[in-house]
Structure formats: structure tokens, C-alpha cells
Length: 448
Image 1 (cartoon, rainbow, N blue to C red):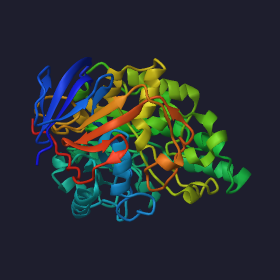
Image 2 (image 1 turned 90 degrees about the vertical axis):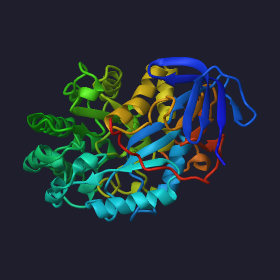
Image 3 (image 1 turned 180 degrees about the horizontal axis):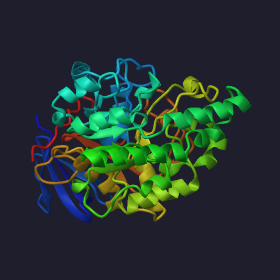
Image 4 (image 1 turned 30 degrees about the horizontal axis):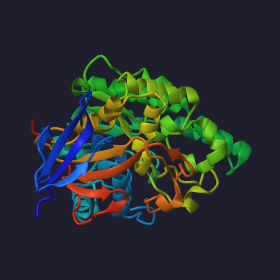
């Protein structure tokens, strides 16, 4: 039985406009947008006073499956995503085994088709070990290749630290190359300096000095130079410094850029002032930096030097986080709250609803060439998120859906609430209740 639904009298945010209209979903597709009569065959949702976003596309998550499922898995983390209005995600390759072959990549797609409530895509991992195999592939068929997270398993795996590897990859790869941009050598030198003073118990406040602006800026500048040499398609993941924002263009449309970047929500929300309160709970790589960096990132997002918003959602157990500095794992769960964070900036008058939609929905679809998603258009998949902009709630242990069961946002009160989430026309989430009878679909790339 098809799920035929009419959402009536809702403020639709799409392609720079907000218009109150009705929307008809049938056979998983947006069939009609406009003013039309209700019918007896459809479920009616009254959207009066609420807002309809295209489903959020999160271009960078670590959902931990296979191999690290004590932290999170494709079911639990996609469920958290859905509750936050995220209908599609692209997962990074640092699961176990690392996703370094097409066979492992295909196995991950199969796993997601059985478990994920949201739509899914995966990066193929690339490093010095599998570089030759990767460039033999038809990389144009991939969503992208990435080295992100692979440095945890072996030193020297960061592309940004290996110009010869970057040269070879950039010269031969036809897909997006998404990289973690820090110079490991600078980080390691800083680590040694602080070890000499503090041993293993380096105060967390020094994290942004160890994983410094210089380590990020030099790596990003070098990667961009090499990418431009080969006209490669380079995407810098999770930008953290105001200095780096000036390396990116905003004078051409996203479709014409060969160098792009993103900001993860925690780098907009937290600053180094928060380390004293939250400690290693907000230890991320690259690190959360200064208030100047935080405001510079938001400015670059608004003026289109930064192209998309992601989460870098990376659950760890509380035990893994609450260890001394060098042993504490980097990353935290945040996919459930990314839209709420951005809407909080809207409430503060810092960003418009149209801009949030552009950066979290439209642009990820454009950047990764995702077919028929990211926009509210007739004929597109009905991936949709309904939000009440005037409903407050507080993040607490009992409403966190990530398997790890904690969040650095605990105690934070948000002024907005996701009320409904549709994936491929299926109402998965309805005011706190889940309908898990259908799974998400693999993201496909547009042939146009």
C-alpha cells in the first residue's frame, strides 16, 4: 500500500524562498506542490505555522559499522539522524576493516540497506597503501574518496602530509577527494613539547594549540595548490580556522568550483572557552579553536566561501572520552542536533532559514551530485523535514538516541523541534514515534 500524504498550509523553504503551500507525496515522490484540494485517499498533515525543509543531507559522519559497534551502528545512528531531520548521510571509511577496497565498500552498502533508517552513501578510503588500486578504478562512479579517520589506524595516512601521494591521486582521480587537512609533523612536534611539561596529563585547553591553526592552514594551502595544478576535485573536510577561510572562492557558483569546503556544526557552536566546562567531551580533530575562528567560520558560511554544513558525527563511549588527554578519543555524537544548532543561530538573527536550507540540503546534493534529493521539487524523492520553530526542549540522557548515550550538548535548551521526518515518502518519525517498517536507500549520482 502506498503512503499517500498531503501536507497542507505549510511554509516550504526551498531555493531561496519561503511560500505557504500544500504538498502531495505518493509512491515515495513529491507529486504536486501548490494549492489544491484534499482527497479522501490521502493522510492529511496540517502544517499550519510549521516549516518544511528538504531532508538534511549530512556529508560527513562516522556511524562505526562494521567493527566498532560498541560505539554506534548503522541502525542506532541513522535513528538519531532521523530524529534530527537528517534523511541522508555519507559515512567515512575508518570502520574495521577500513573501507579500502570495492568489495568492502559494497559490503557496507549491503549492511546499510538492511539496517539504516536514512538514505546512505559511503566514501572509499584512500591512503598510501591502496593508492595504486584506487586510481585503477573508474572513480567517476564513486561519491568520493577520503583519508578521513584513517590516521587513527596508522601514522602517515593523512594525504595532507604526503605531497607525492597527493600528486599521484590528484592527477588520476575523477571523483571528489575529501581530505582531513592537518600537518601531522606540526601536531607531533607540539605534542612532544607539551608531553615534556605535563607527561600524559596535558590539560585539554591546550588541544587547539597542539592541533594548531598553523597545522591546519599549511596543510590546506598545500593541498589546494596541488589540486589546482591537476584541476582535481578537492574537498577540505571540517574547516576550523578563520585563516583557512580566505583560501576559498565565492566568486563562482558551487557547480563550477573544483575546490570546496565545509564546516561542522560543533566548530560553529563551541569555542576554546568551552574546554574548561566540557573537557575532553569536546575533543575533536581538527580541534575546536577560538571565538575569532568560530565567528570567521560563520562569516565564510554566509558569504559562500564555505559550501556546506556537516556534523562529523563520531560517537565514542563515555569511558573512551573521559581518559587523559592522549588516550581520550577524538569525536562526539552530534547528528541528532545539527539542525537545531543551525536554527538556534537563526533565532539569534545570525543566519536565514533559506541559507540554512542551502547549506544543509541544496549544496550537499549539488556538491556530491546526488540524484533527485536536497530540493523540494515535483518528481524528487520525498525526503522532507517538518520543524516547529516555537517549541522548546532540552537535551538530556533520556532523549539522546545515539548508542553511546551521551552528548556534549546535554543541558542545552533548543527553541525549535523536528516534528516529522519523511524518507522516500515514508513517515519514519512523527512527534517522537518511529515507524521502522522501511529502510533507507543508497544515494545515487545524477546522470545529467
